[in-house]
Length: 75
Length: 532
Image (cartoon, rainbow over all chains, first blue to last red):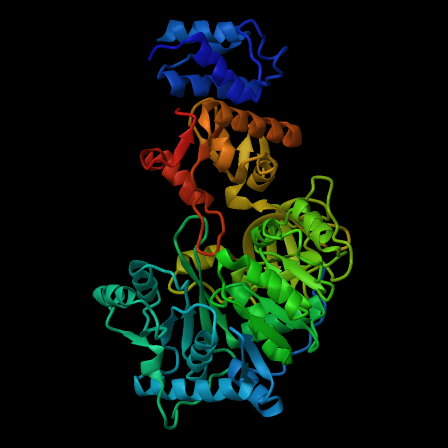
């Protein structure tokens, strides 16, 4: 399933409960995500886009744009 | 803390009690219903006629009779007629499907299924088509003149079986004797300080434990006034009207009933509940917001108090003392007070008994405890922690004074990232969001590194449903509210059309979880947002 940046940012908004999310926002520092939230985000993108992320993907996901890139890479 | 002493009951069986009432207070109404008063003398005669008829049909000691009645005189007459024969009443929700009625009848090996005269024809036909469906009678056909010819029951005879649906959906039949029932009635009367001057108003189902044992047997025991209403969630205003009109002093409901009541209060309603002494809030987690809103709306103080109980201990176990300010802990959990006289509470950590302020599984020692589940030795063995002591399956702690606070239902607790969260805490936070009618939180184990996740299902209405932007805003607001209160975010929030509930209105998290996991919730169009 094609993933757009808009769809990924919406998913971040819904998971973190934030009304405004930009591509360059850092998940932890800017958006207040905790490690459990990152795991939940990963699970949600997997369900949403029908992909499988690797555990090794998670540490390199710092920003919303990083998450989008990983989704593209794993499609 | 050992149990406080209790007085023995004034009667050994429910029939001894009814006999005492019709001799001492024959002309006093046992209850009113639909504007009519039904005296103890009337009830005794009606019970005699029905018992004679049932005896002619071969019903006798130990036989199980399924009662499918709404609140009203027919139900109470049928219930006590079954008692008169030493038979066992199995009351069930009157809106049950033919399949459900037959399944309960089958589970308890019923000798007879008794229905009201105005039971719908298709229901009667539906039951008749089921296996054993021929063992069916309408109450009008069951009356007879003549002698009963069967001795009355003994205190240790089984009086009724309370089927509990439980969150897993497998009904278990809790066996309760005459002695269990009368003991718990005395425990509650003493613990709740109920007197013959109390005026009961009940809109609870009389075919279910709190509505039957507390709200009809306790007033019968004292010959206190009882105004019985139809148990109908759609007519919550009739409850409010009766509370005011009858100058009620005592009423009871689960928390959701009071929330429903408060939603239906109109600005022009006068605050006329000044006679109310106790509004027991039990059978569900008690919310501080409900306590506050109830008192604020009706200009009352210390009237709504929290209670705790379970069918396996007959019904009532503890309640916060009337007319005192209900304690609330720092996490907003409302204390359910000291156990009633004759009841001892213990908290098990698994290794031993917990000290005060330490959480563990609540254990109950009481002479009102059930002897077990009907025809279910495996669940009965699981129920008993030791001789005379049952496991409740609920998590809680005792304060140094012995007051009980419920933390969660053990089997519904959610474990996220090494922390335990009660679903009710998440739900209460989510329900503060505009447009959210109710929430259900369940733990879902993804079986991978994500472990168990807290998933929230929110039943929404009105503008929260208008377009994707509105639905997104509702989800964000729920995540934000849960995070603000508990410091954690749910893994996912789904907006749903309707949450599954029992006929009594109790949320069913287990079935919801199953329907989500097997995909049927989405297939049936139950999931509105988001689409993943």
